[in-house]
Image (cartoon, rainbow over all chains, first blue to last red; front, top):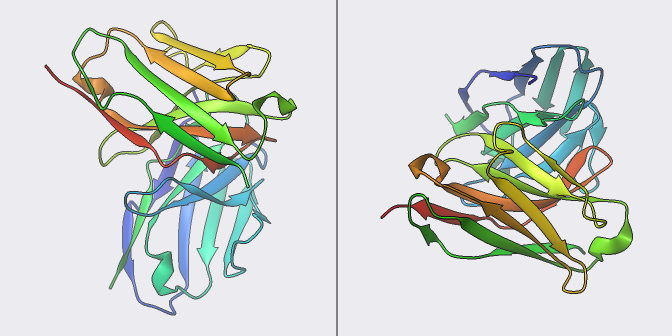
Length: 107
Length: 118
């Protein structure tokens, strides 16, 4: 299985901050990498697919980059509604696997 | 707008079979463009893909669960189902159904907590 490792596991930030979350795959996955946002008690919501494509309806302050094994999710200016847990997921090969999550908390 | 809704018992006894159903509305399971998936999340933990099914009945399972998992589809009811046998406390989790299309899980149900306990 491809292991997905996110860093950090959690972070504290203020509204307006630029936030960067990293995801590393245990083997190359090209750009088959998706990002999801999950709020407490809710299902994950797709933010970014194919490493850098913004899902319809997702604010442009979210962006993704990377290829191969190293990927980044960036929130350019953190908003109150962005406090949540973020997961990366590889769609290169089955079984489809997720990172352990990064919890973004209010500083 | 596609919507998915899980249903089933919230409490299952150890060694028994967990059974859940996902009802799809706003779109047809038989459209042919999607795989209908089950994903679970252990309390306070990350996400684990269980498996999925195509409308034709073709199934794909996570090898870690394959020996205990059965996913089936009922196109007439626009539903698909999960059975997980011989459950233990380690199977306690929130179970989500989701639609997979073009390498992404784009629509999810709200999730249902299943607790394994005697």
